[in-house]
Length: 178
Image (cartoon, rainbow, N blue to C red; front, side, top):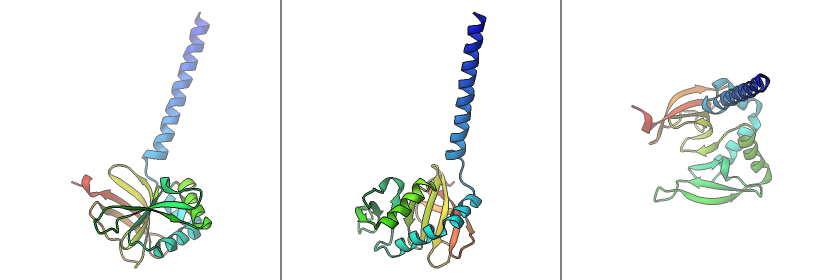
């Protein structure tokens, strides 16, 4: 009887330890924002990828354009979101991409864990992490000036990176500021 109880306690203890380790991994991966160094390393290791995606956004016909992780398809389509409409709402449409650009978006989203790339008035945001209050990522600024804050967010940290016009950012959504 004691042997069975001991084995049961060992099994339960092992399951508790496994659950704690898995929880710790989840916290590290999803709840803690990536560091400036980590994002700068992304840019260093994948400079060509980031530059080519910037060129894609620079030549797009939209002033504001967003491509998200969940809007790319293997047949070369993406669903692009833009607030360029006269009504100020979102225009949703499919844009065909050549295979090379589609692969770059897929690599950025699936291998580097970015969630969204968004072209705003004077910058392109490579969004990596967020919670309900803030987000982090890297920015490419068209004119080299600091990016412009807008209605829903304000940049709380902007650090220049090793390439001209590139910044590490942290922002806070305006609704959470006090």
